[in-house]
Image (cartoon, rainbow, N blue to C red; front, side, top):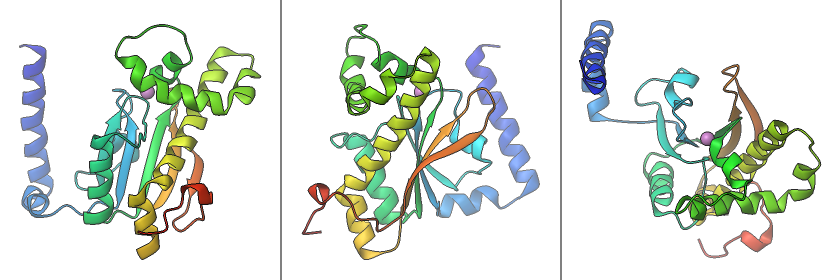
Length: 210
Ligand code: CO
């Protein structure tokens, strides 16, 4: 059997098991999805949103990219965010990074990664904002892991800066924004930062006409 054929076989077994547990499972989900959460995570294969949070299909709307970035010109991210906030009306947005993130590590090096440089530049900017704190950490792994936390914090701030989130806050009491970091070595998620809905931002970033 070819490796990819195993995936299809596993899928058949999974679908059969779901129907055995709950005969209406797929019919119900096919008609409607009402997730309460938007997850913005890293593409890393070791950080599967549903599995590490014990959530089922239909419970989390997911966007993943290298190093869980919220880049304000990224049409893909903005489309997901707009749909999640304005149509699905999610109550919480979670940016989840992970310790030992290769994207964060790469951004702190001077290696030329070709087209990937353009994406990593956004993480280099986070490093520049927090350079003094990060450079004072002696151990390289600790330095990268602190940058992972700071990157999550900055991406949560980037979410708050979007007109999509600001408009939602003006009209309702959600979504709350959460910054989490997942530990590859222990499987545990550590909350590191939070911006509750309605929090006042630096006026520099506030829009007056939403
Ligand atoms: Co990563």
